[in-house]
Image 1 (spheres, rainbow, N blue to C red):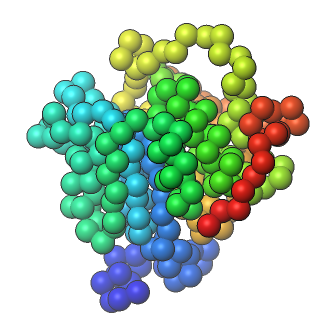
Image 2 (cartoon, rainbow, N blue to C red):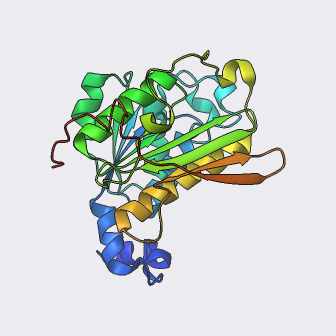
Length: 256
């Protein structure tokens, strides 16, 4: 690290659990963020500020006026721009040292097979149940840790899934792909409490940093759920399901 980096990241370096070694890991890390809206905004900003070397942003949407109530990555003058280009511009102002890949595309299987295999960790910041399962399958296949967040109305949830750990469940262990029996709901019709996505998105960034630094205790095996109306957290234990159609049967391939 050069002198400017030592100053920029000094408050991390002062932490015994992080120090120079973990900060080097951040600088060399590649984080894939799928979804650059309410959750992806704070997650991307904290990861960029922390010095993650490469951030890849994937989103097919453009910035709309209704996004600005909660999607803090996008300023008012970015309305009409793609979210990934708006996000890249904001992150460049925040930390010009970070390399940002802006992928203006839907997160389909082909795209995810390409980019998940290149990442050290993936953040699922989407609001689409089908896309979450596509992301999960790619992460299991390539043995890349996945931090999954969700938020709607006043309810948020977060967990981490790590296919490198034989005991870790995957997303499909909790929400099986063969049980698509409910209607997809979105904040466009149900509404969402603005600070909620900030809370969950910041926690996703924290999970990613701790996984990369290999410090602390991650949320593998735990699902945290927040009721922001009364600020009550509930944590439930989750385990790997032997009959899971994804992690129970998919042949794992080596990462890198």
